Image (cartoon, rainbow, N blue to C red; front, side, top):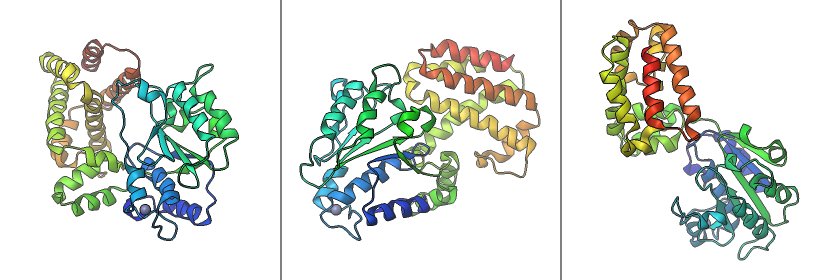
Amino acid sequence: MFNEFIGNDPTKEILRRLIQTRRIPHSLLFVGKEGIGKKQFALELAKSFVCQNKNELEACDDCKNCHRASNYNLPKPDDKDSHQKVIYSGHPDIGTVIPYKNSILVDAIRNLEEEANFLPYESNARFFIIDNAEKLSITKDNAANALLKTLEEPAESTYIFLITAQPSSLLPTILSRCQMIRFAPIENKEIENYLINKNYPTEDASLIASISRGSIGKALETNLEKYREQRDKMLKALESLISNQSYLTLLRTSEDLSDPKNKESYENNLQILQTLIHDLWTSKNNPNSNIINFDLNEKLANLSNNCTNENLSKWLIEIETLRENLSSNLNRKIATDALFMKMAD
Ligand SMILES: [Zn+2]
């Protein structure tokens, strides 16, 4: 039931209308930033076909089929074989394709092509959800091209839902074959209220909503204690940069950031640093606007008095450049040291 999801009311209405009129396009592209529920919406649409206890044609989320459809046993990230085919949910007519490392494997799409031609096993339609569709590789004879034929002439009972946060990375030939459903970031207030209803203390809910920037997925994942701890480290590095202290604090921060044991949180930590610099910029230039880390308002305002706009914008560009290069095989230790040295320059 779409009621369970927060935000995106206009999009819910569009999807409801599609369900009620049973005029669902065979190729749909769900577009919007990470963590706002695109995949859940796609799955919900598929469930509305297999549900045994529909409520105005919407899935009940409670019957055996709804439970089966929601039950995915995703393979381990390093299990390449399992990423070379469609991964089925507990329901044989609802499957998904996910990237292996940084791309969707061409064999997975070939398997999808075959499967898309079969008649449904149990329900009256089959559904394939391609998650992170921007990872369909674009070289000759690749996953993206393999998909085109299926999107062009889908079987009567087959539906393909592509999910992406980066539609501009998809081939124009794929874009033109799909109807787009857009999702907007969720309002801070909606996320905050959702968390308060889940018994988060109000102040925590408010800060989590602020740092998640419209992504309910990110909000639910955030460990505030860990966030504050990381933020303290980044703040110390900034204080040291701003007051021109020795390089020692910077090198220590760099070492900590690029330590292999912090690999998983590396990008997240860079983002925390970026957000703090952005907050400094806002404090300095638009003191009446809200900053993201509002609980540090006074501290950041004081700190911003001692830095120049030129430095702040330079730092943001340096971090952004590093983040863009992260997908290439970059030596994080060297790159992070270089980042702080450039920032200190
Ligand atoms: Zn159901």
